[in-house]
Length: 480
RNA sequence: GCCCCGGUGGUGUAGCCCGGUCAAGCAUGUUAGCCUCUCGAGCUAGCGACGCGAGUUCAAAUCUCGCCCGGGGCACCA
Picture (cartoon, rainbow, N blue to C red):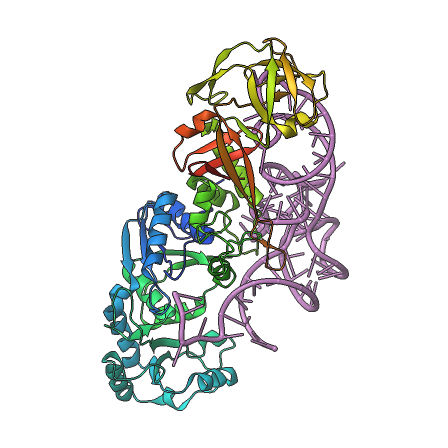
């Protein structure tokens, strides 16, 4: 399945944008929205911008810029150009000034509460009728930082009676006396999103905007018209939410601060870093996005869909490695000394390992639980044994090499195993945004010696357990 | 309160524009069974949905109207 065709899109003559606000870490939601833009960029051979919407100095921080850059790189999204809106403040000033000159905007010194009240009542304040030269004079003072934060605001002359409240003279500029991580204290008059966005989309030559529907489209259009900008196609879709993993900083931040989670990259977190640590691979995000597409319907994706796809993609490329959770020692009487070479994958050529065995094994106590004394089962890829003693200290005897059809097969490790701990993540939040106390479980066990050859970041399959990513030596995280 | 946008199985999505081929497809989930050396892999089968009510029509998931429910906007956030 592909994404639906775009209206008015001519191959080679399109431009898209990824517009993150660097005020938090990149999340799955961003990843999916960016992927949609990227898929269209590829489909229409267009230009793709990475544009940081950093017009609120109080919110942005350098580490967030990095989060987005590395997340985007990880996803395999190639963008053509990068810029920060804060690079273009002078340019946005030019357009702001023009609006003032045209009489499409005015300087207002009403306090916040009054503006709000009048907006609700649908009546204009006395500043709306100020003559252009007065507005321009105040403007110059604002640009020159003569006024204190909160004293003035530049408002767009919309329609104070409009049933759409966002058209009732919204703010275009406000004073923020706070150093910006990139421009420092050079500017204190900052544009708001609506103007900055219109100017940027125009100057970047954006033809198609695909974004989630939390923006004020009509307002944008009005500003664009006032500035005589080209028309662009705007396609809005609802946010990408996952069940039990709200992207809301309000909910997530406390977990990080109270150390309920290990950090923003905790494998339970809906951040790109969290996904990565959990062993979700970039292709999964891309394909999942392609599968669910975008709609205006409110939705809450179930992790099982993403996880299932992830397993499907991991399956052909992951080494199979024996893992014995909750191990119990099993001595096999009459066992021949054996050196077996077992391929890492049943079909694909992922190499093999050789294991030396001499009758001393560890198997999972859960496997043995259903096995009665006297029954025969098989040590996978090795030989058959018969259980001669059940219970907490089991024993068995060698029963031949020939594979018996329909026999149970168990994984095993020898004395030469490695201790491993597997972290099993679950959804962070339960119904009603309450933290899921059982969201992180740990399983200890023995893995075959070859795990020591793995590098951090490698993902393997522990058969009958799941796909696990090596997070640090001896520690794995279950992908799902 | 006002404005905009939505409502297809547990979840997500296809179909809706241009009514019949839809006793609704796919995926995930779940249940049962199979499994040639993975019972969180693979295979097979089953389960399960058009928000409600009217109307138009030979025929409605698809068109019209009303209602109900959900989301977003109404920021000196983006």
